[in-house]
Image 1 (cartoon, rainbow, N blue to C red):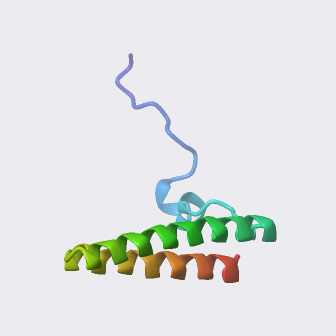
Image 2: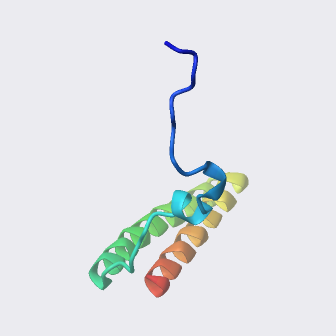
Length: 85
């Protein structure tokens, strides 16, 4: 050991664009994959909806509202995923 630090990289970290480090390359998903993911999301929306209805029927206002919000958020995510690709 000579006491000198080992070379880490030829390019300083400050010169590497953040987009190259954090964002992987991604293309548009095929239509069949988007439709399949949307179908899975619809099943999850149904489950959230059933939990919301059961909780509201049983008197659990907080759980019912939170499950309803989860259903709406899942539906929104599925719609934007299919539309955007």
